[in-house]
Length: 143
Image 1 (spheres, helix red, strand yellow):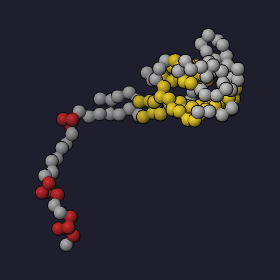
Image 2 (cartoon, rainbow, N blue to C red):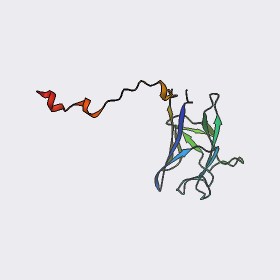
Image 3 (cartoon, one colour):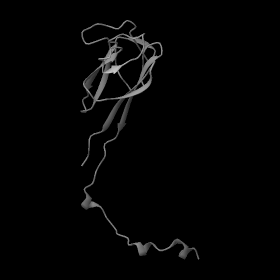
Image 4 (cartoon, rainbow, N blue to C red):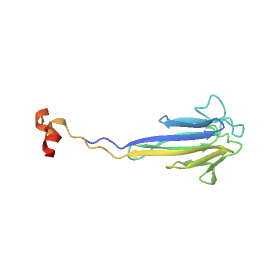
């Protein structure tokens, strides 16, 4: 039996409130100053609806995230997005991408992956039982 590769998507936000980690698993996240945003940014320098994360399926059955400036209605943020030092409207996130929303407000994206795990049914194991008296006392053999 083989299970599919396991991946975890993590977004670490640093803003005026400090540092907060978000595990991403939903299809869409709104990011911004508005208290109704899924991921709230605490700073006067970011827009109410600064960006949107959109989950995208990959060919291997896994998924990735795309960050888009503004909301899904096409309204862009005032400051835009600076991703890895480049001003971009949208970007497919890669491991350790740095997104700057404004002064002292940033996010770092992490894609954590584990390879597929091969499991063997229990009846295929070679099990040897050892009784406690077989182990012996280590001081007895020290001589």
